[in-house]
Structure formats: structure tokens, C-alpha cells
Image (cartoon, rainbow, N blue to C red; front, top):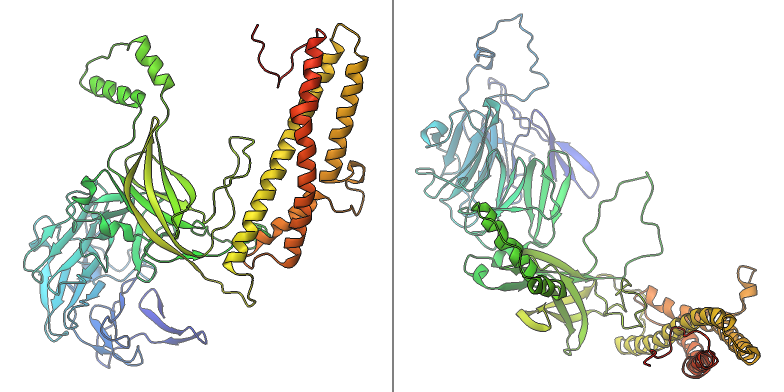
Length: 624
């Protein structure tokens, strides 16, 4: 690894033993002083990892990772006397308040590029308005002055220079003239080694001066730039630029890199922050033609990292250290909608906005039209996940707005236990490693239709265990049994809670019944005693809560069985045993609760009504 600090102080670090070797190039006797940029360019050759390039006012080459250096150019800058440059409208002499020590040198090479196609083609960009190119490895250099390029100021600073990854004659240059009060973005391209240049900045917003440009290693027309206020990408070689927001702040983005192995885009900001766009590969498939389709769906470009989240530890180390957010846990899929899914209300409001823009004014719609808007169901977009057998695993909601969107399936099954509240969790059992498909659907009104063809992806375990656990078949069988027990338990406890609420109403209703209520009171007491006994079987004696050790009960055994899900190992024999005991208890309890729900409680409610007392929730509606 190579690292540096200002004034060209370069170090090679051996990451195995952490040794740092100081390898700054040194001039020969009689050579002038080397002027290094504050961020002097350091490049490892794409043709030979032992070859590195470094630059001061001239280009240095090493073929032994910095142990020795050879200059391969003369001074490639304007090489003027900095002390004679006018400042504040005049030049200055010795007694002026000079303080250049903590500033970057001037007349330096600011950026350097080697063609990955032809090792002899090298590019240089300076801080004083010059581009230089050689096609013979540095034996001769061609000088290109920026004021000879139409639309480019002579004083521009070369922020970045990048040789095309595919064509040896093509180069991209990002320039910056903000030190002269000019915040216009400058981004130029040449396809003939600098003989002719075209601008790629015409589509960029004002003041978005360009700091960095990087080209995708798979799709030559996909490029990214870091600007003064964010990140943009193009899918047509720079004709049209689209801003990448998605959580990226409005901030000066000084560097943009591609992590090729992971297909990740990494951005470095002037606020000393790092932002990562995980798996940008779907952008490679975007073209003007493809985006004419109603929808597109893209699978992850690499196997999805399958692992069990550790929920047994705190999410924070306090102020001990900072840890950034990890990517979302699961399979992240990308989709594109050409148009938003709109309700009648949305369409009306959009039409009315156009009228107002034309200084025309809408009229109030009919009552029936407004009522139809109120009754209309909201449209939806969702991904349907299926396993290798074609069985539905889960559905994941997405955005209905036009544009690019990302959703993450958390590698779990849909939770099919009883729904007792609308905002409950939908996190079921974790899906096992293997092959899955995702299909994009939309729902408008009562009609469901497929938007895009299915895409396939793989969940791949990244942590093989030291011990061999149960087989995937055994795990699935245990999950099925546990799911059945949980459904029975949740329905039983939910109904029991409803019965307890009904009994509270019955207590009031019996008190208001205008007849002899002795028989009603006896039935009421019997039902209350049965509900209490069922609760004891499920949870144990309430009197023993928080009073030391408590004997196992149905719900505690079921809870232990659920702990098999805490790891990817699978259920042990003890998990299976406890699930068996819990299932036996649930069979008895659910039968007793069913008898209360279907017979005893409704019978008592009807008896209250028959004796002139109040109707209570749960009885059929009073029809006469």
C-alpha cells in the first residue's frame, strides 16, 4: 500500500508486518528542487504491479515499487516564478507577509493517468493550465495548453485526468477554475490523443464543478463523477447526467472509486466522510431503449451474503468507537418504473397543476367523482420471492413512484402466525441458503399484474460452522412443526384475551340485568375460574412471577423451542423435546379455550339478553 503526506512525502507500507518504507523520489546533484502538489499523484501501473508512477513538476517512474526512481520527463508545467505573480492587483517584494510553507507548491503536476490499454500512453494534468501526453512511455511529450481548447479558461486546474479503459486514444479531463471566481463545471473528452476536444458538462447544473470521474470496467458508457454538490452518473458516455441521491448528502465529493470485486461505488467527501453505493451493477443495464419499458427488475450481481444477525449484543459501544451502518441484511433488488402508479386523485391534482401553470383555473369536481376518489384503493408495487421449487416465500413492498428504487428482502419467510394488529412484524423463519427468484408485481384496484420477468439470485453462507448441524430437511421440518405450534399458541392467547375483555363487559351487563341474576352469577364465576386455570397451564401460577425459580409451562417450553432460531446451527434434540411438550399442552389448552369461545361465553351472553340485560360484543347483531 502507498500513502503520502503533503509535499510529496511518500511511504510504501507492508500490510503484513505494518512496516513503512520512505520512498520519496530524490533529485540528482545539480537538479532543481522538486515541486510536489499537496496531493501529488501516485499511480500503480495497470500493466505491472511493481511499476509505479509519481509526479512533482516532472514524472517519476519506478519498476521496483519505489526502491529506485527514474524521471521520464522534463518539467511539464509552465515553470514560472511564483514570487512574481501578481496578487491583489500587484506584485510584492521581500517585506510582504509571505507564508508559503503551509501551502501547496505551484506549477506542479496535479494529476496523472496511464492508459490501461497501451502502457506507453501517459497523461499529465497540471495546476497551471497544461495537459501533456506521451505515446512512447515518456521519451517525448506533447503539450496541450488549456486556452487552446474551446470554452476552457487558461487558468483552469486539472482536477482529474483519466485514460479510457477501452480505447487507447480516449481521455477524460475534469477541470476547475473556482480560484478565479468561476464555478462552472468543466468536463472534456478527446478521442484522438488530444487533437480535438468535446465538452461533457453541458447537461450538468451550474456551480457543480467536477472533481473526479471514473469509468465502469464492464460498460464503457457508464461513468460516475464527483462534483461540488454530489454524485452523478451517465449511461450514454456523458451526454446525459443523472444525480445519484439515495441518502447522499449535498456535499463536495472529492473522490470517486470503483471497488471492482464487489461492484461498489465509493465516494470520499470534503467533510472527510466515506459513502458506499453497494452493488451498482444494475446501472450497467440501463439504456435509453431499456428505460422505455414500463418496468425493469435487476437481481444482485453477486451471491447474497447469508448469515444470522447477532441480536444478543447491544447496538452501541457508547462513545468508545464509531461504527458506520452496514448494508441492509438481506438480498437487495433494484427496479425501475417508467411512470408512477397514480390514483384518480393523483391524476386530478396533476392535471389541475398543469392548468395553474398555464394560468387556467380548475372547477370543483362532482360529488360522485370526489366520492370515488375516497373509495379508491391505494396502488401497490411489491416483489414476490420464490424458492427453487417455485413456492412463495415472502412479498416485499416497494415504492410506486417512477424512477429507480431498491428494496431488501431480509432472507426470511412471511410470518403466517395469527395477525392481531395491523402494524405487526412480518419477520418469519430465516430462509436457507440456495437459489431464489424475485418477480415484480403491481396492484391497482383489485387487479394484480406482473411488471417484469423474474430474476434469479443466490443466498450463500459466509460463515461455515465448526460443527455440523441438522440437515436442511430437518431444519425445515422443525420450522413447520414450530410454525404450527406458534399459530395454535397465538390464536389461543388472542382468543383468551378477547374472552377476558368480554367477561369484563359481562360483569357490567349482569349488574344491569333487571331480573334474578343468581344463575348468571354462578355461570360467570365458573367461566372466570376456567379462564384462570387455562392461564395457569399456559404461563404458570401468576403468584410465582418474579419470585424466584418457576416450573416450566407451555409458553416457556415453546419459547425454548423458538431459541433454535437464534443461530444457523439448527434445532438440538432438546429443542425438539421442548416443542413436543409445548405442543401437547397446547392441544389441551386450545380445546378448553374453544369450548369457552363457542359455548360457555356466548351462552352466558345470550342468557343475559334473554333476562332483559344488555347486549355485549361478540353476540350476533340485533336484527329485530
